[in-house]
Length: 321
Image (cartoon, rainbow, N blue to C red; front, side, top):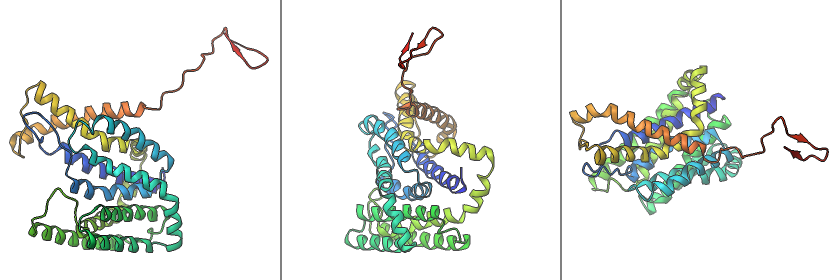
Protein backbone atom coordinates (compact mmCIF):
# COMPACT_ATOMS: atom_id res chain seq x y z
CA UNK A 1 0.00 0.00 0.00
CA UNK A 2 1.14 3.55 -0.71
CA UNK A 3 1.42 6.08 2.09
CA UNK A 4 -1.75 7.80 0.88
CA UNK A 5 -3.66 4.52 0.86
CA UNK A 6 -2.44 3.72 4.37
CA UNK A 7 -3.43 7.20 5.53
CA UNK A 8 -6.90 6.82 4.00
CA UNK A 9 -7.42 3.40 5.58
CA UNK A 10 -6.32 4.68 8.99
CA UNK A 11 -8.83 7.53 8.75
CA UNK A 12 -11.55 5.13 7.67
CA UNK A 13 -10.74 2.92 10.64
CA UNK A 14 -11.03 5.91 12.99
CA UNK A 15 -14.38 6.89 11.48
CA UNK A 16 -15.76 3.36 11.80
CA UNK A 17 -14.47 3.07 15.37
CA UNK A 18 -16.37 6.23 16.28
CA UNK A 19 -19.64 4.81 14.93
CA UNK A 20 -19.01 1.46 16.63
CA UNK A 21 -18.48 3.23 19.93
CA UNK A 22 -21.78 5.07 19.52
CA UNK A 23 -23.64 1.75 19.39
CA UNK A 24 -21.58 -0.63 21.50
CA UNK A 25 -20.58 1.54 24.46
CA UNK A 26 -23.89 3.28 25.11
CA UNK A 27 -26.45 1.41 27.25
CA UNK A 28 -29.12 -0.65 25.47
CA UNK A 29 -32.09 1.48 24.49
CA UNK A 30 -34.77 -0.84 25.94
CA UNK A 31 -33.69 -2.85 29.02
CA UNK A 32 -36.94 -4.87 28.92
CA UNK A 33 -36.85 -6.20 25.36
CA UNK A 34 -33.18 -5.62 24.53
CA UNK A 35 -34.11 -3.58 21.47
CA UNK A 36 -31.28 -1.43 20.12
CA UNK A 37 -31.81 1.86 18.31
CA UNK A 38 -29.38 3.32 15.80
CA UNK A 39 -27.54 6.51 16.67
CA UNK A 40 -29.47 9.77 16.13
CA UNK A 41 -29.36 11.44 12.75
CA UNK A 42 -27.15 14.27 14.06
CA UNK A 43 -24.54 11.80 15.33
CA UNK A 44 -24.51 9.84 12.06
CA UNK A 45 -24.11 13.02 10.02
CA UNK A 46 -21.38 14.49 12.23
CA UNK A 47 -19.38 11.25 12.25
CA UNK A 48 -19.33 10.95 8.45
CA UNK A 49 -16.82 13.63 7.26
CA UNK A 50 -13.78 11.65 8.38
CA UNK A 51 -14.99 8.63 6.40
CA UNK A 52 -15.65 10.82 3.36
CA UNK A 53 -12.15 12.28 3.60
CA UNK A 54 -10.78 8.73 3.70
CA UNK A 55 -12.87 7.67 0.69
CA UNK A 56 -11.76 10.67 -1.34
CA UNK A 57 -8.11 10.01 -0.54
CA UNK A 58 -8.46 6.26 -1.16
CA UNK A 59 -10.10 6.47 -4.57
CA UNK A 60 -11.27 2.86 -4.85
CA UNK A 61 -13.59 3.48 -7.81
CA UNK A 62 -15.41 0.43 -9.17
CA UNK A 63 -14.06 -1.84 -6.46
CA UNK A 64 -15.55 0.49 -3.88
CA UNK A 65 -18.98 0.26 -5.50
CA UNK A 66 -18.79 -3.53 -5.37
CA UNK A 67 -17.96 -3.44 -1.66
CA UNK A 68 -20.77 -1.00 -0.95
CA UNK A 69 -23.30 -3.21 -2.71
CA UNK A 70 -22.02 -6.41 -1.11
CA UNK A 71 -22.38 -4.99 2.41
CA UNK A 72 -25.31 -2.62 1.90
CA UNK A 73 -27.87 -4.77 0.11
CA UNK A 74 -28.00 -7.55 2.74
CA UNK A 75 -28.05 -4.89 5.45
CA UNK A 76 -31.04 -3.19 3.82
CA UNK A 77 -32.89 -6.50 3.65
CA UNK A 78 -32.04 -7.83 7.11
CA UNK A 79 -31.34 -4.91 9.45
CA UNK A 80 -33.49 -2.04 8.20
CA UNK A 81 -36.86 -3.78 8.83
CA UNK A 82 -35.80 -5.08 12.25
CA UNK A 83 -33.77 -2.29 13.89
CA UNK A 84 -35.19 1.13 14.59
CA UNK A 85 -33.22 3.80 12.74
CA UNK A 86 -30.95 1.34 10.89
CA UNK A 87 -31.70 3.06 7.58
CA UNK A 88 -29.71 6.08 8.81
CA UNK A 89 -26.51 4.08 8.49
CA UNK A 90 -27.17 3.68 4.77
CA UNK A 91 -26.89 7.44 4.21
CA UNK A 92 -23.10 7.34 4.13
CA UNK A 93 -22.75 4.31 1.79
CA UNK A 94 -25.32 5.87 -0.55
CA UNK A 95 -23.35 9.12 -0.61
CA UNK A 96 -20.12 7.22 -1.22
CA UNK A 97 -21.70 5.39 -4.15
CA UNK A 98 -22.84 8.67 -5.74
CA UNK A 99 -19.45 10.29 -5.17
CA UNK A 100 -17.62 7.28 -6.61
CA UNK A 101 -19.63 7.62 -9.82
CA UNK A 102 -19.00 11.38 -9.88
CA UNK A 103 -15.29 11.07 -9.07
CA UNK A 104 -14.03 11.62 -12.66
CA UNK A 105 -15.98 14.88 -12.82
CA UNK A 106 -14.65 15.93 -9.42
CA UNK A 107 -11.11 15.22 -10.57
CA UNK A 108 -11.61 17.38 -13.65
CA UNK A 109 -13.08 20.09 -11.43
CA UNK A 110 -10.00 20.00 -9.23
CA UNK A 111 -7.64 20.13 -12.20
CA UNK A 112 -9.36 23.31 -13.33
CA UNK A 113 -9.92 25.07 -9.98
CA UNK A 114 -6.91 23.74 -8.03
CA UNK A 115 -8.66 23.57 -4.68
CA UNK A 116 -10.78 26.70 -4.97
CA UNK A 117 -13.81 24.44 -5.36
CA UNK A 118 -13.71 23.79 -1.59
CA UNK A 119 -14.49 27.44 -0.89
CA UNK A 120 -17.31 27.33 -3.44
CA UNK A 121 -18.84 24.22 -1.87
CA UNK A 122 -18.53 25.67 1.65
CA UNK A 123 -20.22 28.84 0.44
CA UNK A 124 -22.99 26.76 -1.09
CA UNK A 125 -23.47 25.03 2.28
CA UNK A 126 -23.80 28.40 4.01
CA UNK A 127 -26.32 29.61 1.44
CA UNK A 128 -28.30 26.40 1.82
CA UNK A 129 -28.19 26.92 5.58
CA UNK A 130 -29.76 30.34 5.20
CA UNK A 131 -32.66 28.82 3.27
CA UNK A 132 -33.01 25.78 5.56
CA UNK A 133 -30.75 25.84 8.64
CA UNK A 134 -30.71 22.05 9.11
CA UNK A 135 -31.63 20.47 5.80
CA UNK A 136 -30.37 17.73 3.47
CA UNK A 137 -28.87 20.31 1.10
CA UNK A 138 -26.50 21.49 3.85
CA UNK A 139 -25.46 17.91 4.60
CA UNK A 140 -24.89 17.16 0.91
CA UNK A 141 -22.72 20.25 0.41
CA UNK A 142 -20.58 19.65 3.50
CA UNK A 143 -20.14 15.96 2.72
CA UNK A 144 -19.09 16.89 -0.81
CA UNK A 145 -16.51 19.28 0.62
CA UNK A 146 -15.13 16.54 2.88
CA UNK A 147 -14.86 14.09 -0.03
CA UNK A 148 -13.28 16.69 -2.29
CA UNK A 149 -10.69 17.37 0.40
CA UNK A 150 -9.75 13.70 0.14
CA UNK A 151 -9.43 14.11 -3.63
CA UNK A 152 -6.98 16.96 -2.99
CA UNK A 153 -5.02 14.74 -0.61
CA UNK A 154 -4.72 11.98 -3.21
CA UNK A 155 -3.71 14.49 -5.89
CA UNK A 156 -0.92 15.81 -3.66
CA UNK A 157 -2.33 19.34 -3.53
CA UNK A 158 -2.21 19.41 0.28
CA UNK A 159 1.24 17.85 0.66
CA UNK A 160 2.74 21.23 1.58
CA UNK A 161 0.14 21.93 4.25
CA UNK A 162 1.94 22.26 7.57
CA UNK A 163 0.51 20.59 10.67
CA UNK A 164 0.34 23.91 12.50
CA UNK A 165 -1.87 25.34 9.77
CA UNK A 166 -4.10 22.26 9.85
CA UNK A 167 -4.40 22.60 13.63
CA UNK A 168 -5.41 26.24 13.17
CA UNK A 169 -8.22 25.11 10.86
CA UNK A 170 -9.26 22.49 13.41
CA UNK A 171 -9.30 25.04 16.26
CA UNK A 172 -11.34 27.51 14.22
CA UNK A 173 -13.77 24.79 13.18
CA UNK A 174 -14.19 23.61 16.77
CA UNK A 175 -14.95 27.15 17.88
CA UNK A 176 -17.58 27.61 15.19
CA UNK A 177 -19.12 24.22 15.92
CA UNK A 178 -19.31 24.78 19.68
CA UNK A 179 -20.88 28.20 19.18
CA UNK A 180 -23.45 26.59 16.88
CA UNK A 181 -24.24 23.96 19.51
CA UNK A 182 -24.68 26.63 22.17
CA UNK A 183 -27.04 28.59 19.97
CA UNK A 184 -29.00 25.42 19.18
CA UNK A 185 -29.27 24.62 22.90
CA UNK A 186 -30.48 28.12 23.69
CA UNK A 187 -33.13 27.84 21.00
CA UNK A 188 -34.22 24.44 22.39
CA UNK A 189 -33.60 22.62 19.12
CA UNK A 190 -34.15 18.90 18.61
CA UNK A 191 -30.91 17.09 19.48
CA UNK A 192 -31.71 14.21 17.14
CA UNK A 193 -32.42 16.40 14.10
CA UNK A 194 -29.87 17.22 11.44
CA UNK A 195 -27.19 19.66 12.63
CA UNK A 196 -27.23 23.25 11.45
CA UNK A 197 -24.86 24.53 8.78
CA UNK A 198 -22.56 26.21 11.32
CA UNK A 199 -22.34 23.09 13.50
CA UNK A 200 -21.74 20.73 10.58
CA UNK A 201 -19.22 23.00 8.85
CA UNK A 202 -17.40 23.70 12.10
CA UNK A 203 -17.01 20.11 13.23
CA UNK A 204 -16.21 18.95 9.70
CA UNK A 205 -13.36 21.47 9.56
CA UNK A 206 -12.24 20.27 12.98
CA UNK A 207 -12.14 16.62 11.89
CA UNK A 208 -10.38 17.33 8.61
CA UNK A 209 -7.88 19.69 10.23
CA UNK A 210 -6.96 17.18 12.94
CA UNK A 211 -6.64 14.39 10.38
CA UNK A 212 -4.33 16.41 8.14
CA UNK A 213 -2.29 17.61 11.13
CA UNK A 214 -1.82 14.01 12.26
CA UNK A 215 -0.77 12.76 8.83
CA UNK A 216 3.00 12.74 9.56
CA UNK A 217 2.38 10.69 12.70
CA UNK A 218 0.00 8.34 10.86
CA UNK A 219 2.52 7.87 8.03
CA UNK A 220 5.25 6.89 10.51
CA UNK A 221 2.92 4.59 12.44
CA UNK A 222 1.67 2.78 9.33
CA UNK A 223 5.08 2.47 7.65
CA UNK A 224 5.89 -0.79 9.45
CA UNK A 225 5.08 -4.05 7.70
CA UNK A 226 2.74 -5.45 10.41
CA UNK A 227 0.58 -2.32 10.55
CA UNK A 228 0.57 -1.89 6.78
CA UNK A 229 -0.44 -5.54 6.35
CA UNK A 230 -3.26 -5.18 8.85
CA UNK A 231 -4.56 -2.06 7.11
CA UNK A 232 -4.40 -3.79 3.73
CA UNK A 233 -6.52 -6.65 5.11
CA UNK A 234 -8.95 -4.27 6.80
CA UNK A 235 -9.44 -1.78 3.94
CA UNK A 236 -11.93 -3.84 1.86
CA UNK A 237 -13.92 -4.73 5.00
CA UNK A 238 -14.47 -1.27 6.49
CA UNK A 239 -17.89 -0.76 4.88
CA UNK A 240 -19.05 -4.14 6.19
CA UNK A 241 -17.85 -3.30 9.70
CA UNK A 242 -19.51 0.14 9.54
CA UNK A 243 -22.91 -1.33 8.72
CA UNK A 244 -22.97 -4.71 10.40
CA UNK A 245 -21.74 -3.58 13.81
CA UNK A 246 -25.35 -2.52 14.49
CA UNK A 247 -26.94 -5.95 13.79
CA UNK A 248 -24.10 -7.49 15.82
CA UNK A 249 -24.91 -5.52 18.96
CA UNK A 250 -28.64 -5.99 18.36
CA UNK A 251 -28.18 -9.77 18.23
CA UNK A 252 -26.11 -9.80 21.41
CA UNK A 253 -28.64 -7.60 23.20
CA UNK A 254 -31.64 -9.75 22.22
CA UNK A 255 -29.94 -13.02 23.17
CA UNK A 256 -28.64 -11.63 26.46
CA UNK A 257 -31.97 -10.08 27.52
CA UNK A 258 -34.56 -12.51 26.17
CA UNK A 259 -32.64 -15.79 26.38
CA UNK A 260 -30.20 -15.36 29.26
CA UNK A 261 -32.40 -13.03 31.31
CA UNK A 262 -29.74 -10.34 31.51
CA UNK A 263 -30.86 -6.93 32.78
CA UNK A 264 -28.69 -4.32 31.04
CA UNK A 265 -27.82 -1.06 32.79
CA UNK A 266 -29.72 2.09 31.87
CA UNK A 267 -26.88 4.47 32.78
CA UNK A 268 -23.11 4.58 33.03
CA UNK A 269 -22.99 3.06 36.50
CA UNK A 270 -20.86 0.40 38.17
CA UNK A 271 -22.74 -2.43 36.46
CA UNK A 272 -22.11 -0.86 33.08
CA UNK A 273 -18.38 -0.68 33.76
CA UNK A 274 -18.29 -4.28 35.02
CA UNK A 275 -20.29 -5.68 32.07
CA UNK A 276 -18.58 -3.69 29.33
CA UNK A 277 -15.63 -6.10 28.69
CA UNK A 278 -17.73 -9.21 28.03
CA UNK A 279 -20.29 -7.12 26.16
CA UNK A 280 -17.62 -5.86 23.76
CA UNK A 281 -16.18 -9.36 23.32
CA UNK A 282 -19.59 -10.79 22.41
CA UNK A 283 -20.30 -7.95 19.98
CA UNK A 284 -16.89 -8.38 18.37
CA UNK A 285 -17.50 -12.12 17.93
CA UNK A 286 -20.89 -11.51 16.30
CA UNK A 287 -19.39 -8.82 14.05
CA UNK A 288 -16.52 -11.10 13.06
CA UNK A 289 -18.98 -13.78 11.98
CA UNK A 290 -20.95 -11.22 9.97
CA UNK A 291 -17.84 -9.87 8.25
CA UNK A 292 -16.78 -13.41 7.36
CA UNK A 293 -20.18 -14.29 5.90
CA UNK A 294 -20.59 -11.02 3.99
CA UNK A 295 -17.05 -11.36 2.65
CA UNK A 296 -18.01 -14.68 1.05
CA UNK A 297 -20.96 -13.17 -0.82
CA UNK A 298 -20.17 -13.08 -4.51
CA UNK A 299 -16.68 -14.51 -4.02
CA UNK A 300 -17.39 -18.24 -4.38
CA UNK A 301 -15.56 -19.74 -7.31
CA UNK A 302 -17.75 -21.20 -10.05
CA UNK A 303 -17.96 -24.98 -10.17
CA UNK A 304 -15.97 -26.35 -13.08
CA UNK A 305 -15.15 -29.77 -14.39
CA UNK A 306 -12.46 -31.35 -12.23
CA UNK A 307 -9.61 -32.74 -14.31
CA UNK A 308 -8.60 -36.23 -13.21
CA UNK A 309 -6.04 -38.68 -14.38
CA UNK A 310 -8.61 -40.38 -16.62
CA UNK A 311 -9.60 -37.16 -18.40
CA UNK A 312 -8.43 -36.74 -21.99
CA UNK A 313 -8.25 -33.62 -24.11
CA UNK A 314 -9.44 -34.36 -27.62
CA UNK A 315 -8.03 -32.66 -30.71
CA UNK A 316 -11.03 -30.37 -31.12
CA UNK A 317 -10.65 -29.02 -27.59
CA UNK A 318 -13.32 -31.04 -25.73
CA UNK A 319 -12.46 -32.50 -22.36
CA UNK A 320 -13.73 -36.01 -21.81
CA UNK A 321 -13.55 -38.00 -18.60
